Amino acid sequence: MSVKLYTLLVPILIIGLYYGGQEVLAKEQLYDERMALYKKTEALTQVPWYYIAAIDQYERNSKKDEADEKVVSITIPNELWYGLGNSSLIQDEDIIQFFHGDGKDGNGDNKADPKQSEDVLFTMANIILEYGPAKDEVKIALWNYYKRDLTVKTIMNTAKVFRKFKSINLTDRDFPVSLNHNYSYRSTWGNRRGFGGLRIHEGTDIFAGYGTPVKSTTYGVVELKGWNLYGGWRIGIRDIYNIYHYYGHLSGYEDDIKVGQVVQPGDVLGSVGSTGYGPPGTSGKFPPHLHYGMYKDNGHSEWSFDPYPYLRKWEKMAKDKD
Ligand SMILES: [Zn+2]
Image 1 (cartoon, protein in one colour):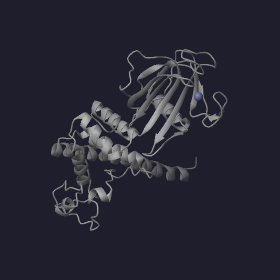
Image 2: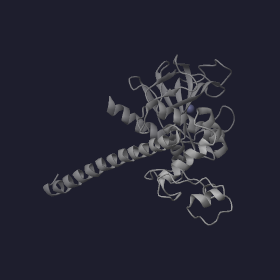
Image 3: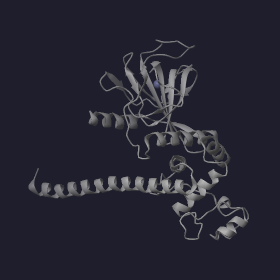
Image 4: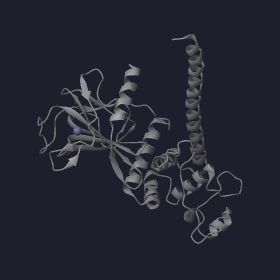
């Protein structure tokens, strides 16, 4: 390498490292800032912080532009905030209350402003409080607000994860198959399938020997476990990013894995097998492999997307940790 090129690259590298570091720091500060707001809202309303955090997390993940920089992502529609028929949009609590709006002042500036984080969180906590701060009451309040089962389920699951780890900064990931075993995979999402009529392959197949440990890739809650005609013994985990992770063709489950249980990256769920394509217990109709599928929910519908690029990323993360 010429001296000139070298002198040019070194400063670029240093600047790159500096801004990369700044970005990580900015993210950490954002998580801290959010947590402080959730805790403050809990102190004011007695609604546990993890429910408020989970609602915010859900709405952030449902937004198209994934505006991760915004501190709070909850959006309360104008007709709910200001009240039906109140087109004035005046941020005065008395006027809002006159029109039966929900908008409240959470930061003491005498304005109920839907663009201020503290006002939005305080208002949302009060909407929840119409039923009460206990788990079953929160569930009913969420159902009344969102009117969608999957939304309620996702928020309650996320709250459970936040509560268990006492954190909202849960970005760790793992590869679903033990790196200490032989395995191979390539991008096969969207391929045509023969069995069961015309359907596309909604996942990535990771080929490995019988008994190879299968691990959770993410933080989440076990949503489903049991037999399915195509998937054999399978398990489904909903994470805190509105994503459902599907593990198929297992030979069996780890003893302590139950529906409703919180898992974290690296937790063993079961082992690689070749179950499926028939009634319960059917096995050996194809070589042993893990079928890994990912489904994203945007608040209206759920769809399959290609896990391959994520698997490559998590594989690298897992290797770097070893
Ligand atoms: Zn498959």
